[in-house]
Length: 118
Image (cartoon, rainbow, N blue to C red):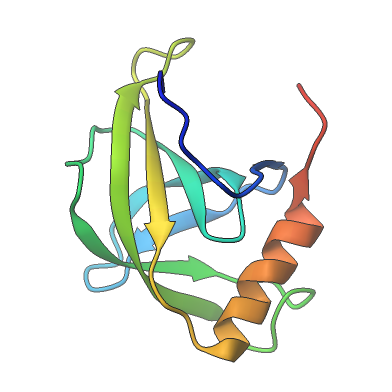
């Protein structure tokens, strides 16, 4: 991304967590980094920019007392991965979440996000 306009600090995601299309349960990608308002996916295909998605992530017991989280996301950018040309990096903005779901997303950020580099 040439013009980085994010306002929230992103953290590299250290837990392999798949993101699925909530309607079809098809694989969309896996979380690569996360902020409190969005995330970056690594995907095996390019995704259209400015598209709205209904997404699902399966949760672990250390972040929630439910098995999955369904939420709205909007793709903001998509580009080919610089190191892995068969993958794409896709930035998403998370839609409005209920209070409980926002606390789950925050725990994901805190427990699985790290400031360290590879």
